[in-house]
Image 1: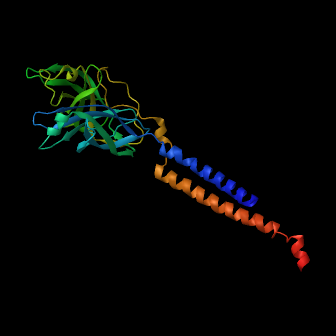
Image 2: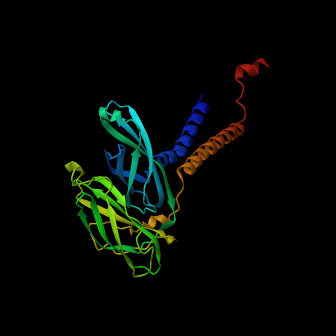
Image 3: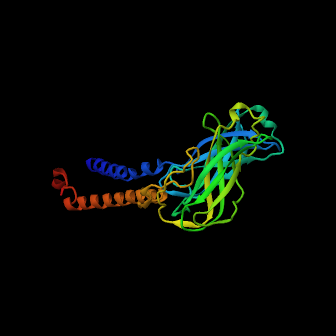
Length: 309
């Protein structure tokens, strides 16, 4: 009885040691989080959700794919959709917008009242690559056209020593409360190849947000901009650069954390390690108990049984 209790205690101790690895794996924070989102029905009758994600991890994220599920106030799942965050190579703490359409021939269920959109980050892959970071917003301003379109305009300058190819700007537009209400992106800037010290003009509009007819909660009061270039894509750790000269805008020159250089393991790998530790511990415990038993030999017979012989 004592030996069985001892064996159980040892087993539980080994099991506890192995499971110490598991909570840290399962509680790993998400690499990407949804910062804010809003929805509206566009001019062709699609339900559109605009949102903003942030890289809250310690590594650069290559691409972000996410899905959304629309629920009405009665708790019914009505529609699902998918989207890709339009910016790539998000460094730690950097934000970028997404545009998700729920296309349907029948959106009559919206009359029940849209309660919420539940999001799932389907893919957020880490990478050692990063955007060419020497493209800075030299100046920017905004205006509303006679048709009610909100535009951000300005100039981008290449302050590096390489030519940047196919530059585009991505705009995120916020209401007075700081929540995203719209997003948009520019055409590829001209010239398509911007050499060192070169400049190019940009114009980024807020999709769907006619400022003359939208409710006050969708009025745009601020915006941020990301500069994206198809080439060159660099590898390693992005250098630290001075902030943009325009404090209203956020450029794509964020500096990733030095923790990118640390060795990291995937959650799957750590879970496997944890269970290997458990199994080895159980096997080791069994062998130890067998050795313990053989060292003391078999239990001696009682006096009464020896007398019978």
